[in-house]
Image (cartoon, rainbow, N blue to C red; front, side):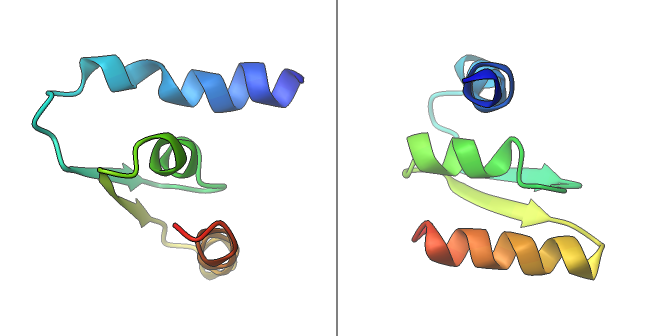
Length: 70
C-alpha cells in the first residue's frame, strides 16, 4: 500500500499542470520508470518517452514496457 500511495500516486500529481493539448512527455533519467510508467498507464493518450543512460536500467524499462503493453 505504501508503494501505491507514496510512489505511484505521487507520480501522477503533476498531470494537472500539463497543458490539455500535451501529447508527448519525456521522463529524463527514468531510473525505475517513475513517474513515466505510471503516467503512461493512466494517460494512454500521452506518448511517454523514458530516457535513461544506464543500460541495466534500460533493460528493466524495456521489459516493464513490454510486459505492461505500453
